[in-house]
Amino acid sequence: QGTSGPLASVAPSRNAVRQATSGQRPRRPRRYRLAGRRRKADRRIRAFPMSGATAAGAIAALLRAHRLPMLHSPFACSLAAARSLGAHLPPRAPAAAAPLSSRLSLARLRSGASPRFFSSSCGAPGSAVSSSAAEHEEPRKSELIFLGTGTSEGVPRVSCLTDPSKTCPVCIKAVEPGNRNRRRNTSILLRHVTPSRTSNILIDAGKFFYHSALEWFPAFGLREIDAVIITHSHADAIGGLDCLRDWTNNVQPSIPIYVAPRDYEVMKMTHHYLVDTSTVIPGAAVSTLQFNIMEEEPFTVQDLEVIPLPVWHGQGYRSLGFRFGDICYISDVSDIPDETYKLLEDCQLLILDALRPDRSSSTHFGLPR
View (tube, rainbow, N blue to C red):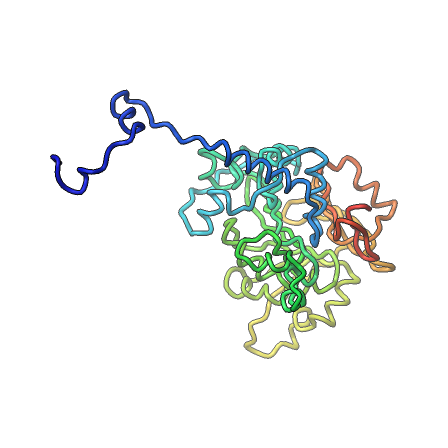
């Protein structure tokens, strides 16, 4: 460009000169102090119990027991971010069927994988928590995705946000976009992969289910709901059944619901228009649900064997957990009967209700329990 013009006064850096003369790549600036701060921050996170969450509290305790790193948000993953932005993804390759297992999950957790993924051992790495070239592939294994791990009213609470004293830092932070303190009703979705198909099996659709679906269904490339299994008949487990109308009106003709007899009787009162469709006003767009009564015996959903785990959720109130392969999920429990303990034998991953870090209550386990 000569000696005049806008570039004349800009001297090349030593790094650029080194690259041009030697053909080597430029050195990256060293960031020792930043890395040190990051490690200290990680230690602080690992030592802090996760309150106000059910499954999340137990997972944090599991990580501390195994000295595992704390986990990252799904949006820290490039594939999850690509899905949320509607990026093109290649078609999924068929995977070999295998019993659900948590062995790969623990390995991925040690590497800092997402807390909303607990992948089975079938298939090659290719989920959203994978790295390198596998990031750009559809999942080839079954995955367990946490849609919510919070209490019935969720976090934040309106009472905390409107309190003039502003003494609840958790709720104040929870309103920030992407803050991990935001929690919705407890719910998981199992994406079950077999050689012939992939099925999305939802456990519980509570009051905040639709809000969870708005956030996580696009992020993880979920669309259909092939079955819903109900743990109990409280509002934080069935309050979102009416929201399934978005799927049955726009995605699929109907959704099978698996529910215990006692909870079905409750639904006849709380969701009478979904159970008895003859009472629906002609032309009304309500959810089209197929109710299947399940006893406390093993049953099959979308080629997956499900073992009910009966537990107590307060005095005299029965709730269900479920076992898939060697993964056990119990979201609402105050006591576990002896006969259910036998069903937990050889379980490799137990996802357990843990409402508070310091104590238990009459209806929920806490971390001390």
